[in-house]
Amino acid sequence: MEQYLSVAGLNFAITTDANLTIDDWARTFHGFATPQAVPDAYKIHFADAPNLRLIFENDAQKRQLVTETEDCTRLRYYVGDATVIDAVFHKNATYAKVRMTIHSNGDALLEVCRRNANNYNIDTYVHPLFNAAMSIYLLRHRGAMVHSSVVNDGTHGILFTAVSGTGKSTMARIWRECGAHIINDDMNALRIDNDRVVAHNIPMQLYNQSPRSSQIDAICLISQSKENFVRPCGGTLATARFMSNTLCHINDSRMTGIHTQNVADICDRVKIFEVGFKPDTDIVAMIKRTLDETL
Image (cartoon, rainbow, N blue to C red):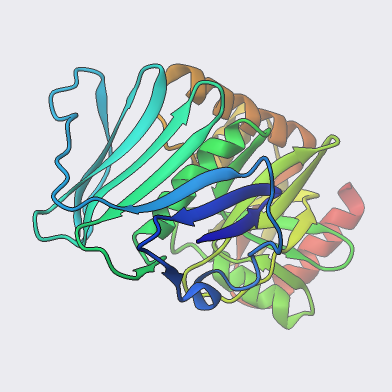
């Protein structure tokens, strides 16, 4: 079985072994499947491998990446001729293996193996690993993923970014109440296209969305404040603050350098503002007025 997924202009071919099927597709990635085969799609393969043992525990080049989930004790990767991300699971976990391999020539393969052969759901574990794949592929396409909400009011495309809990979704809601179009209120993929920065939404586990995009005219570094304010900022500090909210899943000096350059190129093309706000619609009028005067 094969399904195609197009995100941020990057095409993914999702396949399974003959004894597995992908179900629940419409709920998980509604609106993102492409109708026909795409020759240059990146491959994501779902397979079955009962009783598989991991073999990289003593690899001197391995690096710890993340983290704890219900099934996965840690996620590791190492860099050699190919970059490999490997998941290590509890013995009673649903999965035997999740491995993503990115070769130096740009070819990539994501393997997800269950302990038991049955129908396979694209579920909550694969979603964050897909984000890891996206961030790596974007390195090769002048882009980056960023924790952000993006809105378009018909005149300007605006990206709001900050640490979790600061108000990205709240800002998106306020703009929606004022008639703006929401691209995504949590995570967006940015790409430089013909010297413009374009934001694309990505599949979200709890959302049914069709692909959306917007040119980005302003980046707003937001914070909660007792008084609304909007002021231009720029230079190395502004770029560093923006970069802190982007995703770079690889601790390899060459790829980290590419990510850093991509983010710097994005910041060179978009005006950056520091924004403090209260959760009311007054901030919308203030930002619009500032952009009309500045851009």
